[in-house]
Image 1 (cartoon, helix red, strand yellow):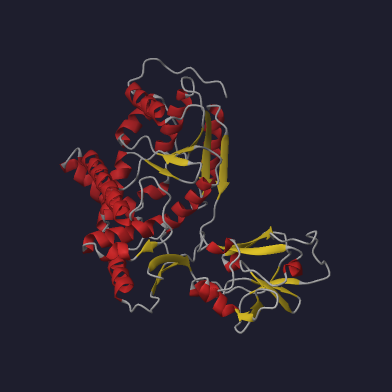
Image 2: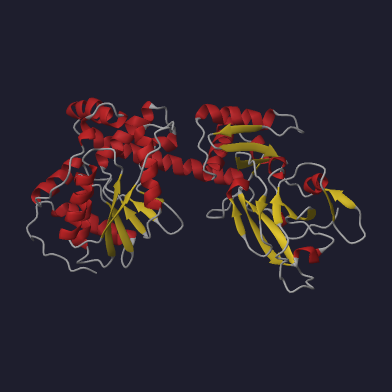
Length: 461
């Protein structure tokens, strides 16, 4: 770890440092890798400075990370500034250039945020620490209320959330005002960059900051603190709603999230609890419908005839009813014939899944594949038949899928394995000639059915 500088002992902003130190110790950052999201602005500069001081008392591996959006003509200057300050404070510096999709439907702010968090997700660290503060919390609350947010949206910026299986985002300054950060920066004579776009009222958050929150704070001096506190109350209420939904779903606390929701769990509930359960379930699958879509989806799922398979598309996902359960899947795939090699696992993104191979229980071969043959994975065209056992009748692939409860929307993206012009296997199903694949059995692991039971052989029904 780099040596730390000696900092002044007389510090009128010492209270901020002491509060942050207590939060860091309580959060458990000791002996972990900590990355500061460093834009070069006031907030992240103060945050990086505070953590550079904390290294002398609490051991952790500290790094600074800058995202270069390229949106401003000054972006290169900001990158150089951040690299220079990090070097001055002896903090390893990393950065990443991102580009924004000009054709995307989202606002520029939303696109920049999405790419920024995608860059964050690529980091190798336990903690990604960001400099959002109390005023940011108040702005976010106002912005979301203006857009009709529910309780979860009104909870605004969470102090902590998981970014991936090994990385968590933490915002330790949410209880601090921008004025406090400015006082700290002034005392320590910190230098930061000012993004000229922050003054533009074209962006919604800037308009709220300058046109709403600023005059509101003149009338009510503690407005930002009060709204940040209200966001905390909304967060508590959101947690209670989630706990109620888990009870309604019959899930054990802390258990593995269910991949499907039985309709029977919804039927007996009051309308608000039914909508809350559905919202909670979909959120855990990465789908966040608005209130009107929740109402429409609830009606669609429960009112459709028993033999129907209703489906509602939400962004790039589909919510369906199948076998009296709610399923969430991607958009239907349109796979094409793909070269494969028995024994070699392969990701098939166009098919939305992975083809895995395992050795058969009865294996009379040495696993060597006929190198002269052309092996293909092909989607079903209709009418294909497969013999399941020696001497048995050939079966329509369609009937095999039906008996194994393969969801209809997955059947046309289910690999059939061909050797030249001969159909030798359907992934996950037995075949009358295991030697045709040199003892290898193909298993299909679809993205939209991660607990697929066809990881083993299915006998003829």
